[in-house]
Image 1: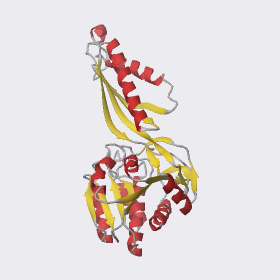
Image 2: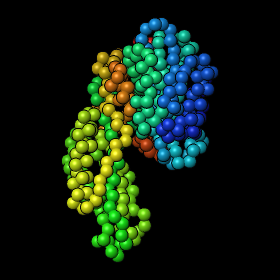
Image 3: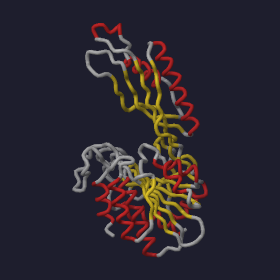
Image 4: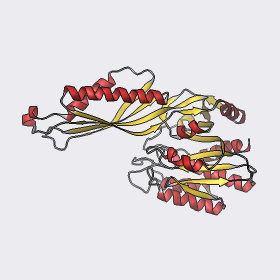
Length: 353
């Protein structure tokens, strides 16, 4: 199978969470060619099965979804879906998993393996919705990787314990009363309340967490006091319970600001990802198979944490960095095709161990 063509084809059809219909169809076609049984899970996901005995399974997972980013890589295989891009490398993750399956089939490997192509990693809680399908099997361990051009191409980085943060999505809305700006005192300015709230949130020192808002929407017309303003943000901490605590603190602060300004406050919680916990024994197993570089915990979120809470698991960074580095979620982020074989080789060693 031409895995470079596979990667390019997947890169051309980026789709956001639970909209991965073309991606699902493409992956299913490849599995049909390999004659590997599979079932569709969580709407747009796929769980493939390789069973050779009555024993437990090892799970390998790749995420499927893309991001609402306008691609600026300039490559011939750039996104055909304007405004969407595989800016987090999930096209590479899926290709590595297909390459692993192809190698397993060719070798007729005498192991029980599951291959999960998971939708909606970037938002929407795709992993959680895949759990019922996984619970049909006895899973002994679970593995995943994530490309990152922060690290040199082909290198592996991980750590036992918490690798990625717990991540909660929060939408904080202030509701007031509109009025013409010439008579603004007759209104209740939701934007002003949101600004006060934001300044107070950002004034708090947070040594063990990250709390930032990346999108603000408020008002309708330039000369009318805004009757609504919503801040969309994320809470990142080292543990799920700390994220819950931070969310409660936001609620208390929001209500206080609203009360002082005669506004209403509502907080809506979106996806809630637990921290990614790397199993110590499996980490040592990985170290025995490849050179693993230690790395500090990062405040990125990954809903593989849902799987890692249920099964002994390992997630590791696979370096893709060359001279020019852009970082994840960047419109120019583009791992080289050469990293695909390196990822397959690592997973192959795991599958054989």
